[in-house]
Each structure stands twice: as C-alpha cells, then as structure tokens.
Length: 347
Image (cartoon, rainbow, N blue to C red; front, side, top):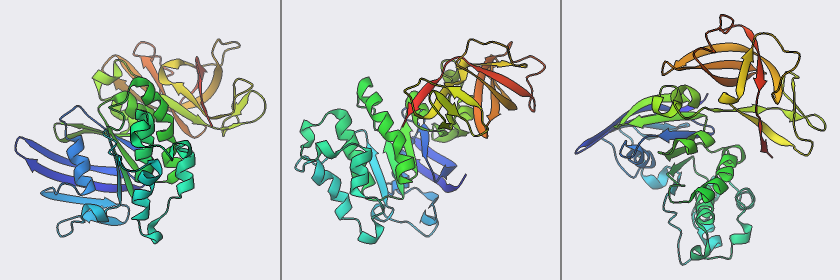
C-alpha cells in the first residue's frame, strides 16, 4: 500500500495532539474517535489552517511541512468538505461549482466538470440556489465544488452529521464512487462508526490526542470492544457476471444471484458465514465457497475473527470462541464457507 506520512505535535492549553500515521494515497481512509479526541484539530493541521509546533507532513511527493517548510493552506491543494456545507448563497449551484474550478490554474485542472456532474448527479440542480436544496443535495454540491479544485487530498470533516438518517443513506452511495472515479485520496472524519465502516477499509482511531489503533478496518475494530460487541465487518467480493444468475470469482467459483441482477460486487457480512471442514452434500445457505484460513484473532475474549483467503481476496468470519475452537480451524487449512446471506452492490 502506497502511503503519505503524517507526524504532528500540536500543543494547546488543556489539550495536546501527538500523532504519527501513514495515510494511504488511494481510497477513503477513516479517522474515527469520540468528540474532543482531536480529529478536527488534526485535519486543520493537515490543511494548513493551524500551524503545529512540530510536524512532518508529506502527501505524495510533496512536503507540506517540516522543520524548515510550511506551505500555506492555498498552496496545499486540499479539498475540504465540512458538516456546514458553506455554499455561497448569492450564487446558484453552477456558480458554486465553478468557484474553485475557475481559480485553479489550467495545468492543474485534472478533474472535468462533466465527470463531477455525472457522478454526483448534479446537472438537474445547476439552476437552483442553495436555499432551494435539500440537505443531501447541498452536501453533494459542496463535494463537487471541492473536487473541481483538483485537490491532492480531500478532507471530509463530519460531512453527514447534520443530515437525517434518510439523507445519510442517500448520499453514502455517491461518496463510495469518488475514489474509483477521481483517484484522489480522502480522509473521512466521523465519530459515527457505522459511517466509517460503510465507506472505508483503512481506519485511524484517535483518542485524547493520540492514535489508539490504525490499519485495516476489521483489525482496528477488533481492538475496540465497545464496537465489536455490536458490529461485524462487511466483506466485499469482486468478480464478474458470467451468465444469467451467475457471478464468477477470479478462481472460477460461482455464486448464484437473482436473474435480473448485475452487481459490481458481492457483499457478505462476517456474521453471515459458517465454516465447515468438509463440503456438505446439501446446505441451506445462498452459496458454498472454498478458501484457506490465514489468521485467527481473538476479540474481547468472547469471539474470534477468522481471516480467510478467497480467490486472492480477504474474507473475515466472526465466530464465537466455542465455534472456533475446533482443531481444524487453524491457519493453513482449507475450509468451506456456507454463505447464509448475500447482498448485491449494484453498478
């Protein structure tokens, strides 16, 4: 995994931020932690809006801050999206979208207006003023405006916190599309773990100004007992449709799907998988897949997270300690997974 490097020491009366972490240069990374843990201070330092007492911030090939370098905010090419959308009331949606685009030097314009309008479905909104937009529409415009500055890094600070549950559900699919379509690394900040889990596969957990855990989301979550008592990770399986009602994995295994569906990938929650040593003649699940156990991690003394390699992809299976104490459940062994329920993530 290619990463940028972030080291920040920031001292304020009553609060110290002291962090070091690698930031992936692809996809969406989640910055998770309770209110007051330092999340907003951290991203303000990244954006150049705060000057920490000591820092080394390297994004891609560019050093934004070191002992003798401090790039001001306007030279960091950061796209920021806040909980408060901060649209310009005197401009229609089109004017808001073009505001940053027109101020970006032509050689730096990597993102096309038409692509943003298409991915975020903004064309029907172009003639509207901000006060006529729903909360979800306004947030999509704010995201589009940030994208059209062609940033090196997108920072999203609790962008859905002010939205109701339905608006959150409406906008999450748009956020998921951004990394693949625009190739810009994003740091998504939230105190809502469900949001982080829905969007990211890499997570940084912050508490009292320090990194509590960081890494792949299932591994970090397994170190957070308060999360794992009520949550299990989704597994995202890539393959391709290979005929009516069939979805083929890279190793040739086939999952049967509804005839009318053409999914981008299969989604299986870690709780919805049972393990067997021998393939059964009959099973009641949605699919039967063969994989190899890679790792077993204990969680809170009550459960085990079993990591399985399936067609070159990682699958996490959450089992109670009694169910995972079988002698054949150990790294290196091949096992059969009965998939009790699958979801389809559509194109």
